Amino acid sequence: MSTLSAPGKEEGARMDADLYDVARAHHPFRPGRLLLWVVVLAVAANFAYIVANNPNFGWPVVAAYFFDPTVIHGLYVTLGLTVVAMAIGIALGLLLAIARMSSDRLASSVSSLFIWFFRGTPLLVQLIFWYNLSTLFPEISIGIPFGPTFASWNTNDLISPVTAAIVGLALNEAAYMAEIIRGGLLSVDKGQAETAEAFGMTRARALRRIIIPQAMRSIVPPTGNQLISMIKATSLVSVIAMADLLYSVQSIYNRTFEVMPMLLVAVLWYLFITSILNVGQSAIERHYNRGERDAAVRKDDAAEKAVQQEDAR
Figure 1 (cartoon, one colour):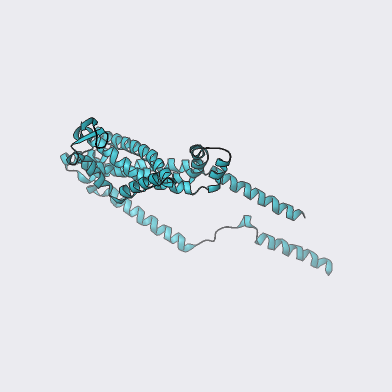
Figure 2 (cartoon, helix red, strand yellow; figure 1 turned 135 degrees about the vertical axis):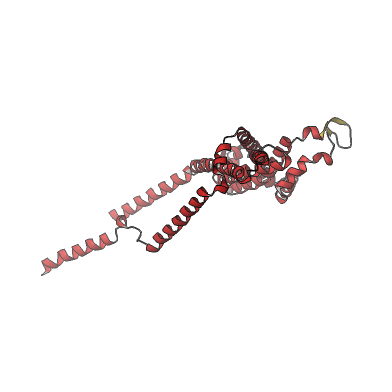
């Protein structure tokens, strides 16, 4: 009897092992979730059918004007404004973030005041203010305070719609980027800077070689969001007669009275650009997360080796 009972126990142990084998685990079938998927897809398909077959959307007009030269020119202006304003905003934001974190009271106060003002006022108001700067200052001059003037210019000659758009967008973006970069720099352990100083590195070199590269993992995602927001914020420059994408489609529907189809042209172009930027942002995030992923893999390998050594004992 004892010889017959031993195989039964071994077989039971194998059955228990198979029962708890993680490799064979799977998600249980949930009919409620399947029903929810069916409902959502049915609603989405119905909405798409209504939009595609509604003549009021004017899809033939959208197709006819999608690559219109006026629209493409406005698209180039939008992209150009975005690149220039973001470049200036990131560079100035980096300086503002470093100044605000500085122990110098003057630099920290000036940076805080700049960020407070440009984050606290609407972007549209700032653009209109810069465009109408000549009403406050008919001339812009350079000289010694309370002393002689070296050079002066007519404000209307300097502040064109292009200048007002770039200055307004860039300064507003710099205030937001300063806080994003400051948050990224604060996410790096202070011991990194202390170690760099112990090795004789200057503060500027430590920032460039050690602190900023590590902070990029925290800076890149919100910066990508700011870039996408900047693409859409350029539509505000249409109020100062800047021929961006929105202003271009407005100039067309003012002639043709096809308001909704032309707005759909702008919407589709904005969606296309932001979709490309989303893909690029994901690639950059993966690049800067490589170190974290490699560290996680090494940690898992070390844990697996420790388990194997424990089993061998």
